[in-house]
Image 1 (spheres, rainbow, N blue to C red):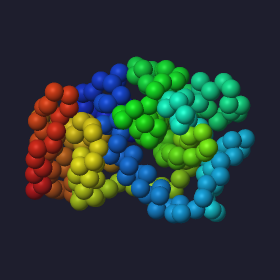
Image 2 (cartoon, rainbow, N blue to C red):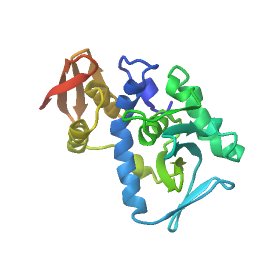
Image 3 (cartoon, rainbow, N blue to C red):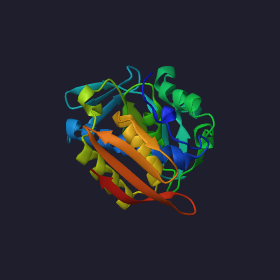
Image 4 (tube, rainbow, N blue to C red):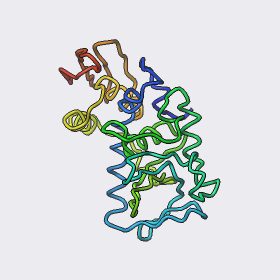
Length: 232
């Protein structure tokens, strides 16, 4: 079975978008950064009929997750977009996300307002982290907003495990700029990175090449915050 955040061995609320995003953000950003290095400054071109996206000489399989509207400030899932003329195959990734995340209202409501938490980037990151395929996403801006599409069949090194120092740096960088539950961020990243770990309410312990890492957290009103990292 492919690892996804949905089989991460930690307690979380499948109906909570914040929980799902917290589990997703660490691994998703790591993969997105590698995708950015691969495609560089090349422009993009999406062909909905063939289901592909092109960056310079790089061509990958692609589908549509949803669209942001700059005028209404709303998100519209591709499976709900009955007026956009999308080919049936193009909306397949959004239908898969809806099926996998049926307990979470953000993935079953076809259209809703965007806000600081609910952005196209955040919605797309969760879609990638629950996919049964190794995928990334790309934001394709246009005159009325932007479409978020999947980028599939990428080189395997996009999804290669992080070493211990890179993983720690990833966690620290995210918590410095991104609102999320630090305990779920840590668990999700370790899980997707292929690291076994043990967890309780206040700590997570993992092994890296014979060395141990222990993360300690404190509970706040809404989230757990990281307070200490011990690396032996």
